[in-house]
Image (cartoon, rainbow, N blue to C red):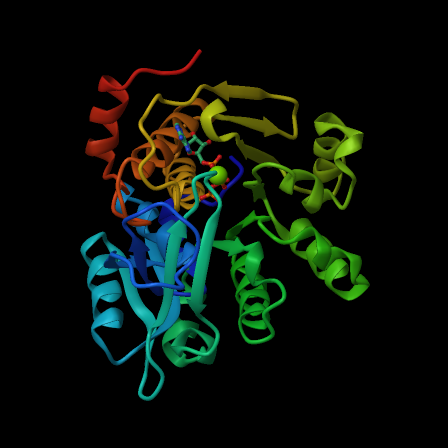
Length: 326
Ligand code: ATP
Ligand code: MG
């Protein structure tokens, strides 16, 4: 078994909690008045942990919101979905972070963020956080936070505490490959990869995690990563589904579900939240990938980044009813 069992303690995720406001029309940018819908609870770490809790995995969030409705909305949603919110701080001065999103016709997105100048950027290690980390069974790390001088040191501290008590670590290596050119950051990537039991890459992120060029091919990158101590790699392949590669050579592939995509944001995070929860609850790679594909696919059918996160019962129904790609 790659990951620590759910009974050891909650899966913890650390990072930004945001309110997301989405343009209702496709187009470029926000430079003229347009119709918007929101706020929706958001932030990649929050989407991940919401899906994890909603699926029935033990889950806890660490982050900060403002003393405002955007913050209360996020805390309320996470609590409703079974996430322990005692590690979410409320900043007395700064507002909850926001993301305005508009989709372009080619699927690219334009954003206006207020993230690190909001409550999210003033996260500090508190006794409440310490209490959660000290009884956690798993840490999920967002690679996007690697270059963040406030949050990354807390992630590293949590990783050490959780590993020491026999917990496991997963990494979504969604970091920009330009970061690796810098040797110090490259070393931090390599250190976090080496501490991880499970990687959840998509696209070229497998190669970014391995510190190799995509020219070497998937097999070489996988072998390299297993050599560093990683034991399982679940690759997200969008409309082509996903695959799980284990260090002992076991390969499991599961096709995607066929859905109409309304809002692609959050698919990867829902995939990860469901996958980690399912694995920690003792399910096979095949069953976990099936739930994870269903979680990602269901989420893209709903407008709003975590509106489509499914309970286990909702995902069971989805799996029974939806057609799968070949
Ligand atoms: P994101 O786009 O949120 O960054 P990602 O690139 O990390 O996510 P994806 O591969 O896009 O991850 O999505 C994760 C999983 O969700 C896929 O492996 C697939 O199973 C499912 N999924 C995502 N988009 C679709 C889609 N349009 N149709 C069917 N399944 C999808
Ligand atoms: Mg994607």
